[in-house]
Length: 402
Image (tube, rainbow, N blue to C red; front, side, top):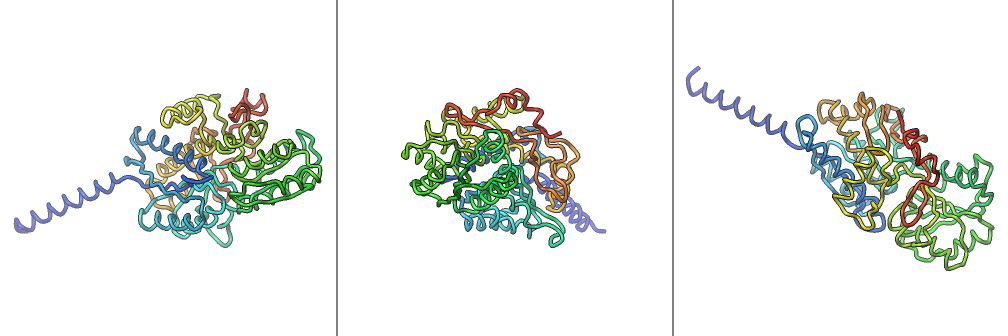
């Protein structure tokens, strides 16, 4: 071997080594998709900002597999077609190894199939439509790449009905739900939960996003003798329901899905939001050391109005999802989609989260991290969501999954 050949070989080895080092040091790209504008924005922004806190903490501690995490943010505007567009962009252009997000059930249902086809895991950490994680099940699909870290509607509907019918003894309830996938699927889950208690809603009414007059729907509920309104909608329209009752001079309790905790419901309804109750995986109270540290970090980083996280549930679930995903990547030992999926389905280490301690949160056949023992009932009091039941405030750890 002559000197020229030897030098060329050494140079080639050096360049290859440098390329390998550069590749190893490249950041791990994680997509984060949600509505950062419009009526759903309290959910999307809170989720994104909670996830940012987790990414910053992990990167400060050295990252994952010796690499930094890099969030690639996209605003889906709560629009199905926009969700599909940015999903394809995150997969094909940004080459993300996984994605977190989706606040809206319709957007999740329209978009997640592209991750399934690409064999890239996606953790839905807000959208609660029961169908979201059940689209790609055996025997048609050998593996499912859609996971969730939120209380799906099957759990919430049962809690809503338990609160209204069993705990508070309302014999006549009405259902008001929006006309989106979220509202329609939630309404169906509510009717199923009511039927299990041999109760049928005295009125079932729907409305569209951005509707500002709920008089017709509320009058039907009132004339039917409804003692409570069960809701499935998001903040702005929920406020229209509360304000509509005030216009009619008729006040009955609102008991609905977790979205009654959204800041734009509480702010737009004002005093009329008082007493609304809903399932919550997380309430902004520092009743565990982990929650205290998270709340303080969020308030310090973002300084939200009134000291209230716009959507505490979304922020906490977004934060926890980053840690769950990071644990899976670490366990997988690389960023290949199938290996991350397999690790998520068999996490060997517990993840100490804000919502709960995640101990083997997923299996191959169950992609729901939140189980029925975790959520509590929250109530709007003084412009903030607080615990509706003192025993749940006093002993939050009994609700955590171990």
